[in-house]
Length: 154
Image (cartoon, rainbow, N blue to C red; front, top):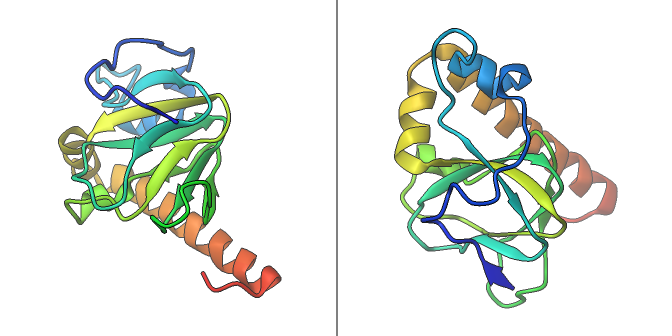
């Protein structure tokens, strides 16, 4: 598993049209504002974050898949997946450390923002905060539906 270089955000820029993205629109792209997220391409098995470590970034999955694991005991075990349109590291809004370990499970395009940049951006308007809360609620509902179908606990 390769670790994602957190200090080299300019490398491997992907092709995402920020003006057509919900986050880009909420950020004001096309109206003289900029999006705090930087697009990057990640190979399969790139480690994004580890549970218990200080939060440094939040990611929005644009293409591909990110696996999320709550357990440290099984490095290959995954508890859930983050698909395009979902976030990794949303705990940045309320906590200082990651709650889960996340890694790409396929070639993935991510939009990445620093913790502080994301917090400032999300708190600047109700529209931005609502966008993030909707995404978090959607993730929770999907996890509950999955648990209901499989008999697993969420």
